[in-house]
Image (cartoon, rainbow, N blue to C red; front, side):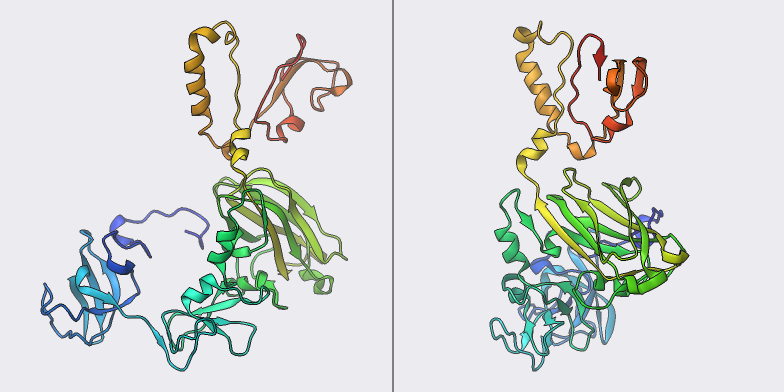
Length: 396
């Protein structure tokens, strides 16, 4: 559970998949959508009850067979009908014009610019058109609802132009899928929307964090945090950045001490290893402050090159491989291909070394000779993916 930060077991019958209707769902009807009975349906399979063609209800659940849908209508709740008999009812936003395609009124979700006094997009224009790159939008599903932060426009357009491997991208929505914070969830958008407001934590000392869920094809090229010395005891003084493919198995990547005069703090740079989750943990604040203030995050990503996955695959020869080349070329090739399926992002190698150690050449270990295999913290920290032996008296 994202908000709980851990695993809690529940019975299967007590959960439902949100936003993932059965594949047979016409027009991708999902829970929470407004629907009505199609005009082409004379009599629904399970009869009308208090429902008519003009009744509009909200989808509450789907049956286990994937063919039936449960809808709450104003005059009859828990009404059951065939999914194939229903149609979506798009929301209408009276008096609102799309500034992209001039749709009037906007039908479906409305996307309102958070910076401009009067600028709106329909869903299609929000995905495909560019607005001011510094302006963020809020999504309004129903008239009268409060806007929900949804980032900048032109996401699909940018994604189409971002297919070149190895290129740098600065679009937050293309780099990070989700952003979660330890507290003050309603202020989380302030970290990325470019506003002058800050995110202020609320909790126990040293227990504040920001977590990023990164897209699988993106490496972090630069990650910076914006702070303000005027915040006094709210200003962070020690931050620990961790990464990993599971929130339960994060590995510390870097500890960053922040000077009292700093305004922009470099947290990560030129990452060569992919981490699905990045956690920014604020461990200490100035003057032993309890809560912290963060004025923004700045991120620059790099599209992972296809050959990076292959370059990180270990190809280790067996002791007698040379003698068996002629007999097992095909088998060796199959083994290498199979090894190539393992992602380097999941490999964290521990390097043990032994042998002569003149000039501390065995990775920081002391002594002129290491008689038994010993763990080398220096070499292990390099995230080694290929290991080669040395001379007769030097091995790794």
